[in-house]
Length: 110
Length: 122
Image (cartoon, rainbow over all chains, first blue to last red):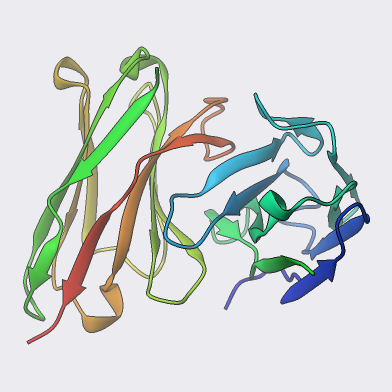
């Protein structure tokens, strides 16, 4: 059971803005950088956001992220069909000394 | 082009062992820390091990600690993961992933391989 909690799913129509939340604690999000990954079923994960709010190479500026205290969020504006995927937040956890992934959020474009 | 190619997966009986390999190309392997991450069928991502670029630190998830050994051969551009006493719950696709920042603990997994499947069953 992950220590980083995400909503199981979010959905939106093309062009809409959706946000995914990631809730953790003082030993992970509260004291370490937060990253976001996306995974299309059957394929390998890919980095989307690193260091809390930096877009990885090739990621469109429709993706943005923020972190505050022990929570973080990923926003996708101008939602497109190719944004459908599972999204995971992740951070190092000083407590158990493990890299922890969030529970994952499935983004569906209606 | 950065590439990571895992191999060594397959069908293993409970209690058995496996050695997974990850051959990398397109970057200076010895300049980067590396990770192993797995994903059980229909489940989320689970980080399992890290090896720092300077060989100072190695970390393991509690779920594999004591049964797993991560190692690397910089001359062969290869990362390894040995897993012993395999259990059905170790069934997963195993990915290797490069760490971008190299700060001494896993931070940013910026490039991933396609994964190698491991099935533990009798």
